[in-house]
Length: 365
Image (cartoon, rainbow, N blue to C red; front, top):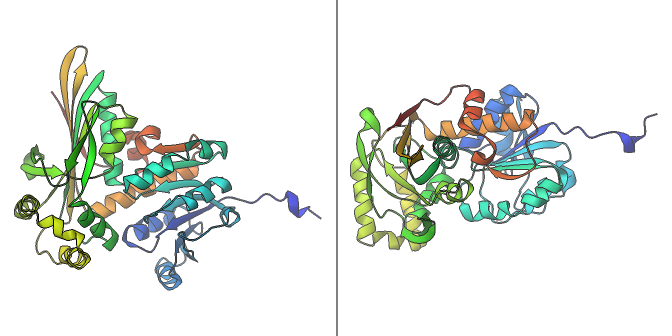
């Protein structure tokens, strides 16, 4: 008889936490096709997980679990990778992953939480586990485009990231709530190597989105990528701005900011009504665009690099990039520790794994 104590546990499962949500379902579906029977849609509502599992003909399995509660690391003994699609307040679950030697990937965008995870770097290293942060479109693809620009220069002085979102796309409730909550925030950015305080939907700048979309005015917004790449890629000035595909709604939001109307979002009833209203705005397209404008020096001469991606359905590209990154983490052993995506991977690494590569237009002058 074989000694049970010597039987090794096979770590081959992928848990997608929030796997029955809008983006989580797409991630599960793509990973379920690549690794059938290994992918679990995880969340506190078993009926939703089971309903989604049935829709995949069992390629994705259901699991009831609330990661906000205490998790015994033993539960993760057969889990090779966790893909996190829901916001967390603390790092208890990430620490459980580390204790179990389970790799962890996070597609959420709250910088204060990501900064908490960063502090687990040495713990993850000691447990030979990898945590990958800033995975998706913004943060994610934007970080990788900035790395591409920095790699193409001897010195990078300034990077401006701009995100355009289409109002025709129906985003998940959590994504809309996050956007509304950022409308009235004051936050810090890096300007000439120093921290400077700025306001969301302030300091508008004209951005050239190419022949198809033209010039649009975009406004500062508290996306996490600007905080991360300033530090990981050592860029003295970084900003991220946002505009919508509707020029007049973008302008109306800018006016509301100037008139102080966004301050009313502190009142919960008005905040909740605004979240609902975003789902009712007529018109708009199911599209997104990201633009990175980088300035620096090469061989003693000034250089400007512009990178542009225009595509359909922001949620789809977020899920595709997340699934591609998860495939890579599942199949290859990456360095242990905590990393933002641009510290561990290049845009080419992701392009090679994506089922439909991103169409990137690059101009250098």
